[in-house]
Length: 380
Ligand code: NAD
Image (cartoon, rainbow, N blue to C red; front, side, top):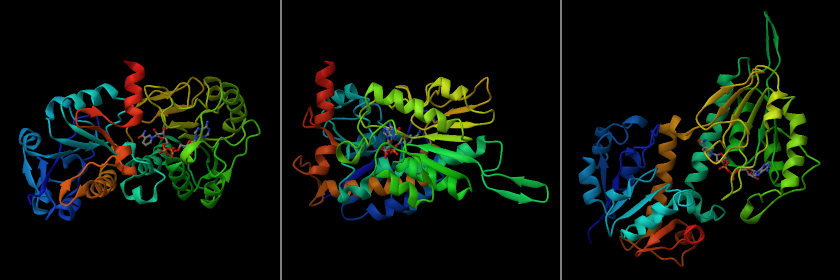
């Protein structure tokens, strides 16, 4: 039986430096089941040269050849739909809930769209495929490093002949995957770290990293479905903002990572709260996006210095700033998903499988993933 031909695209999104497969992952996939094509230059910005892919057994081809010959196109960000053809599959972080129309277009073209961000994250057998977590982990690390870089004092306690420098006080809001990695990284840099999350289960995880958990009186635990937080009511959110403001004013660095899936990020740090912070403080808003962020005045991909001297960094694409580690983790996730999608050496779509029900967005000319189909219905 012929091997399935997978093709690794050259990413074209602005600032994107990740690549869907690394040479290492090519040598693991290449073989009986898979034949790998790689667009020339696809890994260059993550420091994986064409020669390494060729040595690992991939055929390095130009982009037109790649789209023409691949059975399954592998990407990080969605490629232009017009490059894909009927009978082809595309696997990546397609963000179907942000791009429902693109998904409808792919369905019409007869393309099978498979998106890693639809993975049911609480299933333990899906963990090896969890690209949202692998990338959030990298982003959390980088957020702490970016914060330390922008903070113009030491993070650790330093006792030297020239005097003593007290450790930076860091507050992390939201202790999910990114938040926990930001906590660990800030601790490793020597800061005193406190963290807050609405899910009561986060308390022990925060403490296990050697950080203090901030308890708020205003909001009862807000655990939602599938291990995620629920969205707060407007009253709860206002009370949370007011109580958090007192804590934020006492910290040098604030890293925000709060999100509820499918909702706009909760607003936790108001413009007034930023005004109450001391000059030289730093905020990194990991949730900053075109839909808004956790910080009222943050702008995605931009750094603002306020009149009272607070540096507010709206995180852009942080994993793309660590493209070697991010691509290595992503390649493992996408390879694990590919193996899962294969049966007897062929791509076998089975919507009765819980993992596939989450990740398969379009199949056989229709949008089949429930959340995306519902969104399209609501907006048509
Ligand atoms: P996650 O779901 O694992 O964690 C989010 C946490 O926020 C959860 O623990 C949740 O309980 C908490 N939360 C939700 N509402 C809250 C509230 N009102 N108050 C306090 N805590 C609340 O998500 P993640 O994968 O860690 O991602 C975190 C954020 O970082 C998201 O906004 C995500 O989009 C963003 N992110 C950004 C980048 C980047 O490069 N900029 C990369 C990865 C993730």
